[in-house]
Image (cartoon, rainbow, N blue to C red; front, side):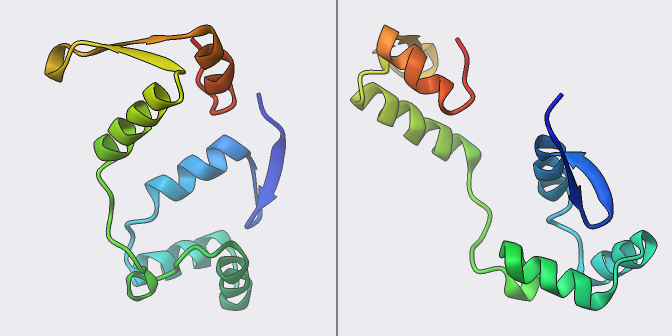
Length: 114
């Protein structure tokens, strides 16, 4: 269990905090306002928190559109092959990746254990 942090009057681990924001980033401004009221968070506290964490509190403030996670994953795999952390065998749907000794150590830095 990770270290607990205080966030908007909640006590969460850092991973729980990240997961909460991933799961709640698609709410409407009205839903966000209702949620903050239920949690007892003032408009000023919410605005201050969002400003300091650069997380948009309304869809109007979002500067980019959602990304394809498979594209990010594919790009990261290609990067790992280039760094010689992974060895690629095959192409397309039958592609398999194998970690090198160097790769095992480097991927741990990303929270990936093999």
